[in-house]
Length: 337
Image (cartoon, rainbow, N blue to C red; front, side, top):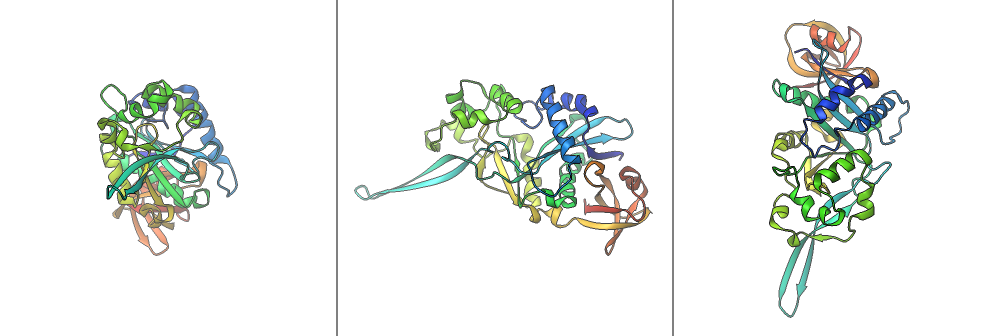
């Protein structure tokens, strides 16, 4: 399989733009807007080339390249600290319990409270695989390559990590959750708000979103029943996150009500179990199927391959060595497939 994960470059703009048009909306991290994508690529290039160990709120953009054709067929992103420049907003689901002595009645109400609790948390997001490549485990390669990148550059990421899953969007491209809350205050459709957020950021949320808690019972049924649910296309992604150790802890997206999944960075399975080893053989013929990564920052590359662990050393197959541009004596990170 001649696919490799590598840092995105300015030459990838058209590929990213074409994929952005295929997302179907609700995909803030990959907007179908050239200027936004150019800005994202420039920020990513700066992140890959910056020296230093401090966490400053950067975005790393990776792409999936077919090395036989040169085509980019997927992308994913890592954010070192959300809310570093502008507040990162979520709705937190909480409960309010009240008791009436006269009625001898206890009433428990669920509330949505606007929250910045997750500010400073790292994030994995922006994952999109071209519809023509949704086989052969390439989505898994995209998703898990990010964890090998984090393992190799742990000092640039926070103690917690999150992943936002797209919420329920109806057939017309609207969001029942947005219509019930945000749409009442902003005078724009979900698609308009989503596009504005993708291009201009979410400061307008801070300016106009009501600060008081919202009683969930006062929302219409269509809105209530989608809170915390992923879009059908994101159910597999949610299971993958759960397998990695993420959990849903009552935070939802302010636009579509989709769930935010959280984990301790060092407890994410693909980070905790990542093996760092020196290549002692780059001609392995049979071995354990694995994700293998090499290179620091702008030289980072990741692919599928075969490995054989030999203590602190590792043997890998020739194709993986070629894709990763490594030889005996080089260091690689790997995790069983």
